[in-house]
Length: 398
Image 1 (tube, rainbow, N blue to C red):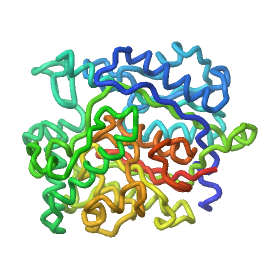
Image 2 (tube, rainbow, N blue to C red):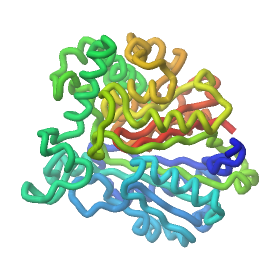
Image 3 (cartoon, rainbow, N blue to C red):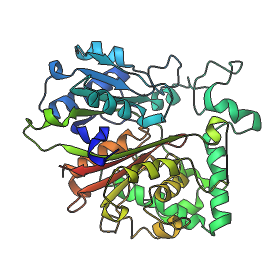
């Protein structure tokens, strides 16, 4: 298909919103959702009556984990929307599923303006001791293990960190990477978070402190793990024709990529130094005339720091086996580096917003509204999201 006919070329991002981020927040999950969504609508200079589509990932969950406490229908009623279309993604390409769904809904002509949100309340769940596991609240010790964990729990991998510890160790063994190199991802994230008022952890982190932190699942340490928070992020997607009438230039979606599979879905092929995210990267670059060298900054998923290295390579921002050396010392990924990385602080320091914080930060940077952490002359941003299902976006300043 010619590049100009790709669905994402017909869609742009016209507004963004984000609630307070708390650990925990005093607001309910629904109130956080309303805050983020109304901010995104107002940011696009629209009114709730203009919104004709709404979706979220993964849909409302009835457990007590705080993983997904608000669904599309509840948000619709709370916001007073009257959409033509309501979506809700329960699996698929994980966190970016709702974004891809919105793009296709708009490109098909179903909607003009689709509100996409993601709300979490995992910090509240942890603080109230209602969570029964790290992935959380599946109904007690006797409940059936479901989803991707049904493939891992029988082998004593009771947390995603046990899975990605395997990836990290294999990467270390194959490419000679070190903990000091991997630690640069966490140290850089904390440095960026110091410039972000919403980040939950802003105190500087040294590589020495990183190395002194306890090992959670070899070789991953405490600071290699993202932080549960309460918060909501909203993104407003519009048809490019509708965006032409808006007062501000929107953010263009240059390309998208997606893939699914790997050990989290019961199937693993090859070694543990690469993920199915490679296919998402290949798809992304096949849908644009831009090249990796054109990327000015990147917001790369950091549910665990090893994911950032693997995604950098999947997105072809580094060569195979070169990501650890690329991030070493942090100079290349700092604000003045060749590829500023995770400028909000990422999930390691800002908080676990399941990748929606990354997309929000990408838009903030491309709109030129990132304040102290603004990357100079940011025009093209790569966004990568997910550790089980995989999604990628290439966003461009309009």
